[in-house]
Image 1 (tube, rainbow, N blue to C red):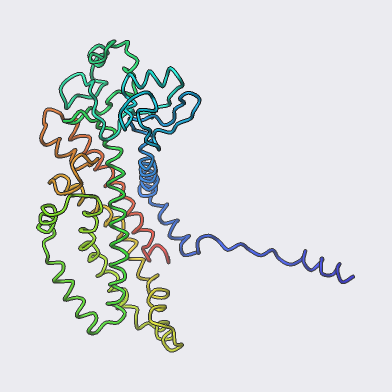
Image 2: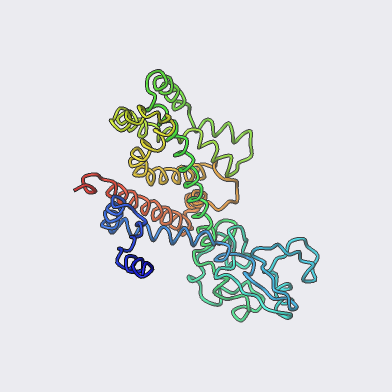
Length: 383
């Protein structure tokens, strides 16, 4: 009898509701973000392009994605096999070499990426002196004229086309755009996130404690911001070899200042609110008050600011590469492509490709930033 009563009560009890993934406030913010259709679709387009660029080695590479040789499955895109494995002598295998290609195909097969060039691959079969026009602008005889068998050569296929032409070193422009897009976005994201961590922490300390801490920190920031970054880059470039992490660390030394003012103002405004005073009266530590109670409110302005900081970080890298103080020579760089477009006015595809790629990237980020600003606008969130 007792079991029956318990079973009846269990059946009559209302089912426990699952906690939503987003709070009601964040649900309204997401709805406001989606209401900005331009920013919403820009987010998905940017994510698609960025995620695709993360797999650039599987899209544009001078190595097969997967191969079979004498019954063994190989992954050349992931593993560097020596040429002696295929009967050669070199330490690095050139899979575009006709001898190696014929040897593998005689004893197995290969699956190539859609574009058979990496960002540093030199095309020795360009129909004219580099920089050469896009392949689709040539007729079949001219396009395949440098191959041994002409248009009938097995290497004269669409995978070996230069769809956007080549640069001054006969490197495929489309492959360099794909890799350059990835480098630019990764540099911008890393710089933005690192700057946010340092800048938000510094602004939180300033705004929360105020007084002499705020005064001394503000004077330090004024002096630190007055240091000419370009001159410092010139000095570092003359002493240290250029590199991704060297440039990132140097830019991170100064880029965090942009976040301090926003977070500092939010903490100065909210540090004497009633809930903060109540937390102090209950003995809650300053660290807990700062990062659990005040920081979520301060992050609203910071998150609105992030897409524009990311935009500026990418523009900074492009500008430095254009001036010759950015990434090492030969790296996939949009700024270096713009520089070549300026140098070779008779090859307009270089400047146009770099300009269009950079314009699309920055425009998408601006649209995402506008939608983020609408999402966190209190006049739309609390109406």
